[in-house]
Image (cartoon, rainbow, N blue to C red; front, side, top):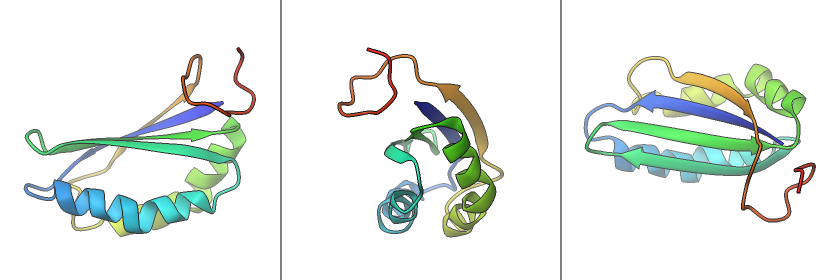
Length: 105
């Protein structure tokens, strides 16, 4: 199991628009990606920031998504984010999400 953490600075007053874009445009794109397992998105309107964590079956699935599809996701977020998102990757060591393949128990 592999995770991508994307931290974004939101434009002032755009937290609702960010959440709407995630739900209507980005999550459907993610669901089409091979190896995608889940998405968790958290938003702080007070701090104008958001964090999105996507879970993937393997690192190469996440890397393929980043290389081939992530630019389209960034286009969908134009108008709600300020600057370039920070992307970090992690190996998942623990999770309470059920039915995740390849996670050591």
